Length: 211
Image (cartoon, rainbow, N blue to C red):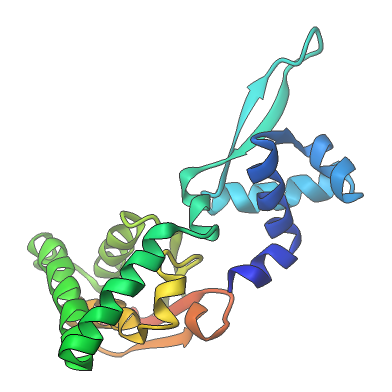
């Protein structure tokens, strides 16, 4: 999943900023043979998704230049040792206690998340409940947005901190489904998944549904 991201222009920018530490749109344009405006368009999207942040810096005696650097959220796109550790732990659990034990772990994670969200949701509408789920997901370092499209609310996850865990432990994906099931009444449909090669995890909820 992340390999495909790094094939895109945005992915290449993220990779370059990882190496450089910081760079301006002009720096990146020269590196990739693109116009500064084309690079800026990609930086706007990366900044919107929380992967880069820009700040004004002075280079010598020239006027300030806007330089961009990666945010901690962008680390999710690079190999993380904790993913391998988590996979190793879950592998041992699966060997010693079976698939049901692994499923129980993720069920417990979902129940704790629901317990954290639900106290403030009494009398709340479906849009408010979906936003509460989005806030919970953001707290784990995932870039999420929610938008209303006619009678449908769309929640989109742009990255997955557990991408390398899901491949070996698909039960990981049950957490978000369990949270939706317990927090949002009515039908929730997942129309795209990072785990199956999609560009995002996308969930659609009927906004007319009330608590």
